[in-house]
Image (cartoon, rainbow, N blue to C red; front, side, top):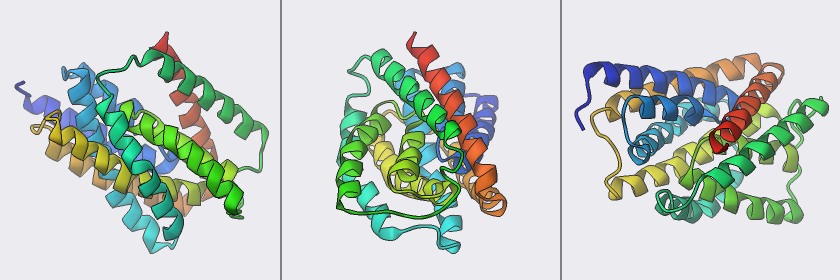
Length: 254
């Protein structure tokens, strides 16, 4: 389809804003970027693929910034990234074949539930005391499989799930959890999803450069702000993102 210069510019700005806030909240870029691409006139599958390309570059900007501050545990990074990779591909292949409404509804309700738990548990995400034993790895592995499939399939707010896993299961603080999610999901999961869409011919290359530039710059600046402000700032940002994500997903499902 022919894309106007205005759509290209709007897409680039939307990518910057979406990836800036995603780097702060540990997910949720799709809530901003995907609807804008659809409103701009892209078919759902092309909008999803182009969005996946953009968020694949979140990992480059944010991971570079987080790594400078030693916020990434590379052993856990590779566990998250490699375990989920094949299920991201599987979800991508099913993106046009499965009914989305039930999954959107369940995902939205679960996010709202966990946001409520986090709000009631005032100390969650404020203190970094990692607890990673065999039991946590097994439970985490079982949870990462459906999260990765969802990331490849629908993608919207998938980072919120991973961030919750780090906070509640592995006892990370909000800053470390956000860093790990943006690194593993951004660098590996989203890149694999983008490559899968690329091989299927779904990506619209006219808007791709602006999406990539917006994603890299937005995620770097968002990560920098999060590092400066710390957990007391990041937790309410994450909770707001989670509530909005949950409500939007439920609304889309109904």
